[in-house]
Length: 68
Picture 1 (spheres, helix red, strand yellow):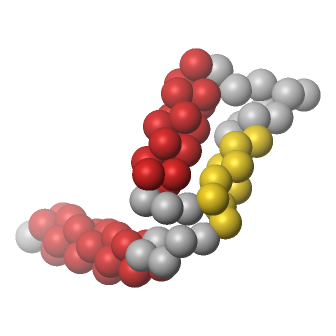
Picture 2 (cartoon, helix red, strand yellow; picture 1 turned 120 degrees about the vertical axis):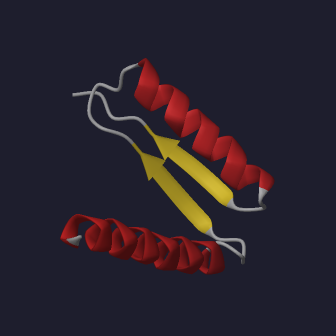
């Protein structure tokens, strides 16, 4: 029973965070995306996907992929 409550509470909090993020990004902003050092293909692909999504939403986006 407690496990189900924790799952429901987590889902509720995630929804609140998603709503806050959606509200925050509703107005165009300057955004910098970064990844971990020596990014692998997953990090590069995720950065590119997020870059394109945010750019299409009207944000000014820069991506930094650090090499050690």
